[in-house]
Every structure is written in structure tokens, then in C-alpha cells.
Image 1 (tube, rainbow, N blue to C red):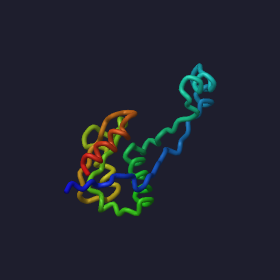
Image 2 (image 1 turned 30 degrees about the vertical axis):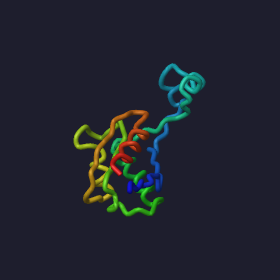
Image 3 (image 1 turned 90 degrees about the vertical axis):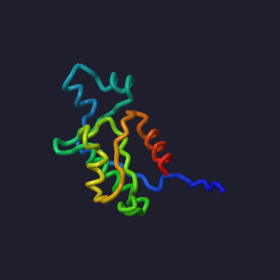
Image 4 (image 1 turned 135 degrees about the vertical axis):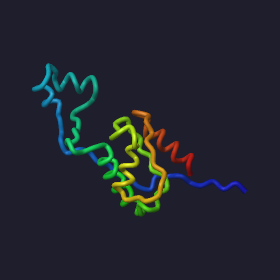
Length: 130
């Protein structure tokens, strides 16, 4: 008998850099306006990483929150996928840095570079591995 295994999200987490760059800040730097930016992009502000902050730091913080929310021990993780086009380095993968920050001893870890659709591709790939 073919038994299907349910797949779902158990927890979520997020992290953003502390430094905020607003449209008003940009108005003082270049010839633009808040109205021009908002009407064309919908962007009100953007977050800027500190010089010593990398994508892996934000990913690890997000992962810690998601694991806590799901009540899952990091050592239970068997596959770590980081969907990003803002990787720390090309090699090793950003996922390897996240794996190290989370203290996960044994799991496969790789980056998935798919830009805006990264989350969808990441979920699809994770489901395929399950």
C-alpha cells in the first residue's frame, strides 16, 4: 500500500537588519522623491545590513525562531536549504554557514538560487526530498 506523507510548515521565523533607509533618506542623497519611489515600486523603506552582518546571520536568526516556534531541536534537521541570491560566498554555500551557526552536526546543506521564486522552489525541493 502506498502511504502518503503529509507535508506542511511547522514554524516560521524572520529577521531583518536594524538599519533602516527610508525614501526620505534617499531624497537627501539623490534627485528623487518619496512619491516617485512609492508609486513606481511600492517601497517605503529598505533594510541595510551592518558591515559585519551577512545573509547567513539573518537566515540563522530566522531559522532559530522557526525551530523554536515549531518546537523542533536543530539536531533533528536532515536537510537545510537556503533560498537566496544574496549569498555570503559562492563556495561554501550560505546554508553551510547557517548550519554551523545553528550547531547542526549532520545534515545536507545547500543554496538554491531562484531569486523572487526562491521560497516556492525551496518548498518544492524540500517536499521532493521528503
